[in-house]
Length: 264
Image: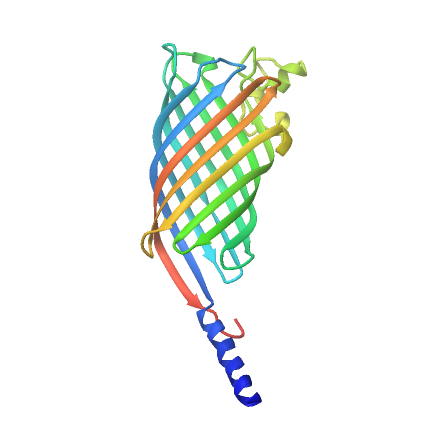
């Protein structure tokens, strides 16, 4: 009886090794987006419009973890909800990295890092004040719930290192005006990647939330919905709110699965 139990244990262990797999995928996503924006210190008018969403990335799904890197972005047009102000062109690319540890077959938790992102807006008819940007690096706590072919994800922003261009008086960072640093020859005010006027925003000073739902339609095809909201205020009671809804189709143009064996 002891020998039979021992052989059964060896069999089950070997079976576990056989079914443990690592999947590596290079993928592209493409779809539609609806975006919204309001900067109260600039205007009470809100904006909204449609555009395209895209993502190009790599993902590795092992028996113990999920990690990936990629380029993500939106491009679109927005119009004001009231008043006849010119339309706005928006562009929001960002490079990201992601790592989640598998707690069990259903739950994975970890971090998502938007390493560098640029949220850019150009409003027609406003000339020198038509350009607006937020340059940022954003760290999230991330979690995913797996259920069959479904994935449900939640990212909560923990810390941002960012620079926003618009202020009350000029199209320049608000903190630069408060420090008395504004002048027309200061290139650091106009440069989205000039770090002089960047500020840290921890979770208590900013709400940055992202949810997503994915369904594995076929091995190489996924469909998904993502909702993102960002809300912060450089000046108290004058917040900036950015929203984004995306529906995308994902295609894994390289998709390889390898069974894990002892010693690997």
